[in-house]
Length: 110
Image (tube, rainbow, N blue to C red; front, side):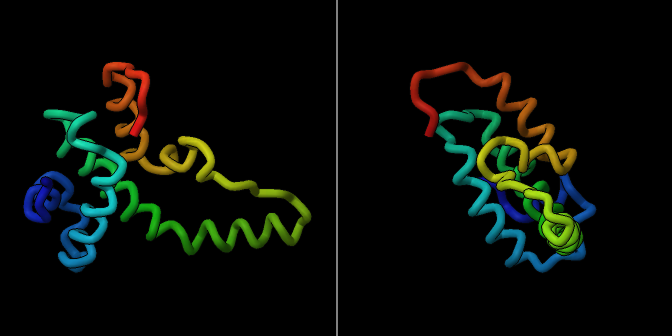
């Protein structure tokens, strides 16, 4: 499993965050990247998802405000969690999608 120190060595822009918060996100990110599926790329995938989640949390306040404006204008902003589009909002999410495209295709997606 990816450790906080390994994560921070690769993604030093998150040094100012509380390590227990990073650890919690690493644990959550691991659910997206089962080691049985990712094999040797597991830590890379978990790191990318962790960086993405942390970044999106920072951006969430702005997104909530933008959504409220769009709703006030009568526009439906939809649910971005229904597809992979929620991962396109950061460079790390995009890198994760690229990495995932390289995985062997199987009949079961955990």
